[in-house]
Length: 157
Image (tube, rainbow, N blue to C red; front, side, top):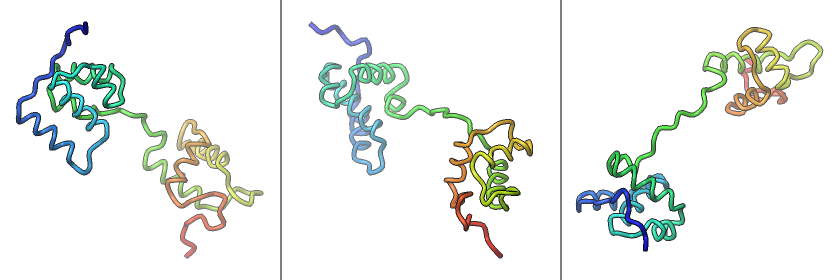
């Protein structure tokens, strides 16, 4: 015999229609669609395992969505929580300096600049305390710059 649900989801007709409308929107996050379906199926009385099987999710995902709905409300249970993410290694000013450095002439005795040379130059100029070559590469990949290209994207005028 399945044990009773700790967080029962009950939806009014308006809330149910609101969730169904959300499923029909063109630009909806897939996780939001899954959470909305979880709430709809939970309100119909489906078990966690059957919901998980139908939606191809973990039963814990179903339990978490139900609990969040009971604690914070239907809208909070469907919406994404903000994710903090990592702080960028370089701010805008430091990125601009790196790009300018990449566009400048290569160091003495070198035909072209490399990622390690650019990283070491940023540290030597005290723009940053330390920086990885991969960070330099990632920043330059966001632009059309490349220290190995003959035309680095800078204007030749």
